[in-house]
Image (cartoon, rainbow, N blue to C red; front, side, top):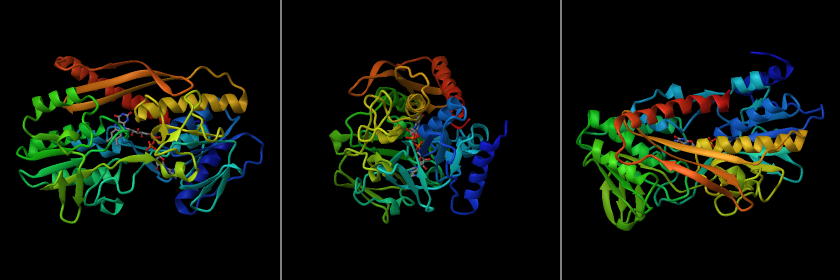
Length: 422
Ligand SMILES: Cc1cc2nc3c(=O)[nH]c(=O)nc-3n(C[C@H](O)[C@H](O)[C@H](O)COP(=O)(O)OP(=O)(O)OC[C@H]3O[C@@H](n4cnc5c(N)ncnc54)[C@H](O)[C@@H]3O)c2cc1C
């Protein structure tokens, strides 16, 4: 590890922030300034790639409230008992110490687009030449009647990983014999299209071992879902009779919950749940709305550079943006971050910029060593990020191929988290 003045400053700010309101150092040296809001899949990657590529020519500040980021990717495997929680937690020390990124643990609460400053909850104002927003998702108010965040202890969403994921796992483990796990699935578009169905597979895996007469019900507002044939084949093979999917055709979208009574009404029929996972409709992280960058629920961007179509000084990455044909995934956010980092370095330091190319793969674990995947490559057109070609696992694949697919996903996790957090 190399320590220089910039990395010392970065580390010092991170440490100071744990003790008091964050300290922000004014950029008095005339270097271009990039502020990144959100230290998740998109933001951490972008900060690292800008700092690494610019070799000190750009000041990079990363604003992220949490000291430890738990990846949603592989959080379902934690629920299934395949991973420890600690193995999906990542800190920001390497970004500060090795890449000289000024890590500020605080919330961004406003963007003054004329003055080009970001306001933080702690009272500081950060000036920028380019701003990156990658704040993930928030939930649409009133999307599931009866549910709001004050009910997330009784009925967790576990769609932002960490304490919510721990809570959901504990609730699954505490279910009585023969009890009911109920999931309210979200409408499109949402973070990680196969995520709810991988989660059901992992809950079924956990219950099969300790509570084999338990039932799983999914109330879904959609008529079909990602990798549906693969999931349904896997559920039939591994968890026969345990999982009941109620799609839109059967009233799966007509849901009301009562967190106090732990009941869910699906198309008028009331079911008592022993554990209930409510995943509401989603929208861009709130700071995108506060900055006036959204149209509808998402922030429109140009796929060439990931610049907001509303403000060219701001790039929006990951789940918050309207990303054309790409699914909202960690892999997508990482891929978009590299495109934005290249464009920003080009604009601020004159480095070479190549045409934007993107890729994504979403792996899902159905049962021990039974992994499946779907993926594609993409390019930027003037209208959107457009799919070029894709691939998907097939039903009926042999056990060796499924195991290889699972092992590929384990390698991907190690590689992509190193690419994000250093
Ligand atoms: C159960 C589940 C399984 C998944 N599995 C996969 C998978 O296998 N593969 C895959 O590629 N993807 C997967 N995903 C999706 C993936 O987690 C997201 O698509 C990805 O994290 C999006 O990256 P992001 O940068 O947009 O948001 P995030 O990674 O959520 O990062 C956003 C960050 O911004 C911070 N933030 C928010 N608001 C502010 C603010 N105002 N100020 C400062 N900071 C702020 C948050 O604290 C957070 O750390 C899964 C998701 C879920 C829920």
